[in-house]
Length: 151
Image 1 (tube, helix red, strand yellow):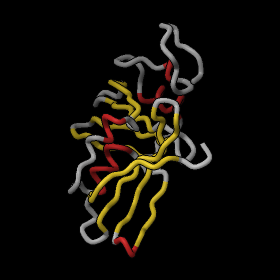
Image 2 (cartoon, rainbow, N blue to C red; image 1 turned 60 degrees about the vertical axis):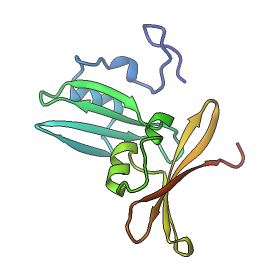
Image 3 (cartoon, rainbow, N blue to C red; image 1 turned 90 degrees about the vertical axis):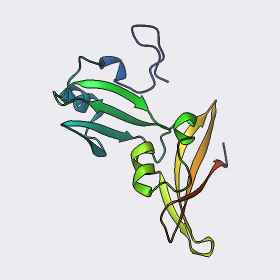
């Protein structure tokens, strides 16, 4: 945490207090947040800027920009609500779009799976949210949560 913004709300990321939904421009977002890791095309000129803070960070920010280049909304996507949307049968592309770039990707040939993980905060503990993909279909087989050793 970085303290509180002008409204007394906790600041979760440096610079967010300088951005205003419906007012700030995409150029202002990029000036404060830097160049996005990924730009997602939302159709009709709208797009989303992705800012993963991993591998050590515990947040991934998505900034929705309308066709006129104005910031509509931003949100931190590494949440239990978003994790619950990851369902068996989803594609890797669908998971990537929902959660952003994973912290790491590992293959386990004997288990016939590839596991992507994201570090996040659960109450006050850092944990890993894991998505297990079947190597053959490349679809979600299951999800799991891991404790981070040493924390």
